[in-house]
Image 1 (cartoon, rainbow, N blue to C red):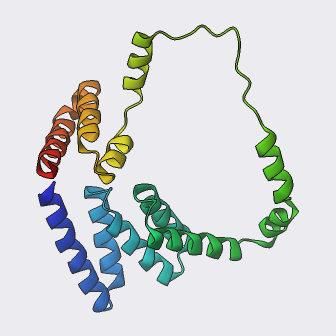
Image 2: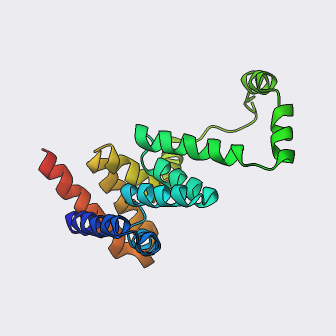
Length: 190
């Protein structure tokens, strides 16, 4: 895990150097390739979004801000960048889309959503504890593991990666490696 982070910082510094040299296209290509290797590195998405913003490539910028936000929703910088990208995309929307958005009554939409209720079906059989545990194990995902890791719940992240390793034999080694990394982080923390 540390090797990836060290590589990430070095790659981002070299990309920043390219930008300082006025080589935005080279920086952009490097970031796109880097994100393919380390798709969860938030700073790379933010830097790429910033480049797209400066080029007025609104759709690409919005996509990168969304990815960054999905990885780190607690960041005020990312939230601000995402809001600005959304506002720019709305500002440049074709007139027909803008007119349609004006017709939407937000107060009615909010009222409708608040009054919506989920009505339980009384004929549904209860699920036993054993079945529930199996169902919960099926709900694990890489995203859940990353969320746990970001929140420094390393033991929980390790358990998710171990489950993913069992469920995905073709990626077993990858998930086991991540589980070991989470276990090491948990040990370092204690």
